[in-house]
Length: 355
Figure 1 (cartoon, rainbow, N blue to C red):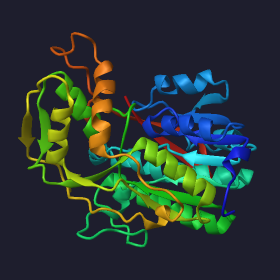
Figure 2 (figure 1 turned 90 degrees about the horizontal axis):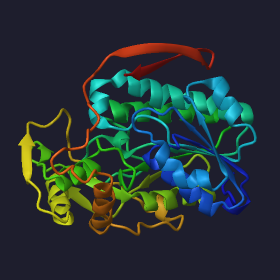
Figure 3 (figure 1 turned 180 degrees about the vertical axis):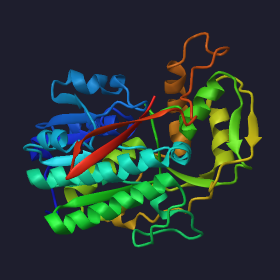
């Protein structure tokens, strides 16, 4: 399959559909695929929120199941009759990956492998897998999809492992799995542990923004609306088993981002503070997006253009008195791990959940 008529799709499965990216994908596909029913699967870890699906659930075209993509029997049942799978499930925060790398390996790599096995069982025509540009690691030059995967943190490593597993399974089972490698995605509904929402909420309550190191590390950003448009382009016009970088046109240093955030909030904020940084906190080279541009896609939004609207959205989530009482941000401490065993694949899937 080299193309997919979105208007004719009848059944879509979105994993991680109650999270930041997944819920936006659900909303976008409801509009782009007017005849489709969407099945959402989410394990509802800390980063998911039922409120993210409020509008989608009101459509009457969305059903929701709670569960893990590592549960083969569950996922195989969910994929019955599916025309398209979008895999947006998994762990996505670099800082957390440094504290709990095993969780990322299990969720991002093994979970994705199990999902592909279920796809093969049901002969689903197409899956779009949401990977990340973190698989490249650091570089001094712009990176094409042919660049070697050289991850420098556990998040990137787990996503690179997932891609390698998918590559092998595509050959064995004759699957069409297309991969998107986005840079830092920004938008509403993002968890407050991530850079932009954390900065916006700190600024909104008058607390200083913490910068790792000197803030010179450069990052590329992508509006979630542009990501969704890119996903549709890859699903409908992409190459079989193709891999696509996707990014906005600009790069910014973390310090530049912090200053842009401070300018976007309506009230004075407390400025910036600097710490000693984190391991492997390197500049990320921009990615080359010619492949996805060849499908007719281009980024419409910029970080600077998005920030004012995002500042209002994140501020609206804070209680009126929160300028003196900051809303709790998820703790990044390692915590206590318990291990749950459940059937998956040909062996036992070890799902690590932190409480």
